[in-house]
Length: 215
Ligand SMILES: [Zn+2]
Ligand SMILES: [Zn+2]
Image 1 (spheres, rainbow, N blue to C red):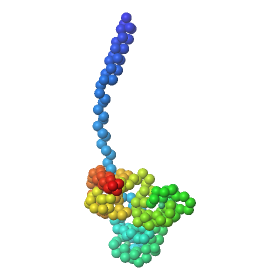
Image 2: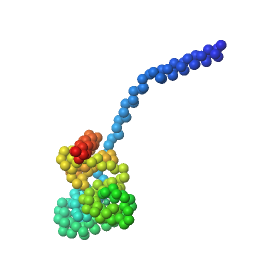
Image 3: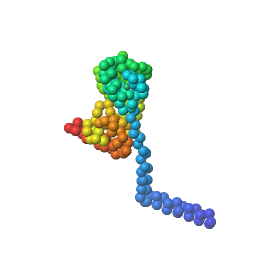
């Protein structure tokens, strides 16, 4: 009676529900959440004060020496540094922090046996072979960014997403954790205005470069 009717009714309703679930088209996918804002940063591993004048450095003024990059306070200090790069390097980076990296940041090879130690902009890093010293110095900023921020990945663009001209060595910004190379550090301001578009441009450039390499 009442009980039985109820059970039947419930059973029917349940059946209808299951039927509906089976034939209804899959729910439309939820509209994508708005992409999080991409932060644009330029990690820099700088000396604190100009080795020539002792004044605070300017973040955009530097000179590339045989040992790596030295930031300076004014353009005039370039000349003084060129006269004795070794002395300038020592006074620019008086403290060196040892890094215990297991992979060579230049070749990506594991470090076996005696590593080659290289003092680079306040860090002592390990290379798998003396052959990697010159490349590590030439790309000091990139090498340190990758060593100290392990999530950083290189996009691999060969042209600057801002100017469209070839990228300069050792010159880049991070868009999120993607390392995008630039033709000049002055391009960072333009990247900050539209980071996502710039990242996509760099990624497209990297794909084109990889495709032409493969041919
Ligand atoms: Zn100076
Ligand atoms: Zn190496």
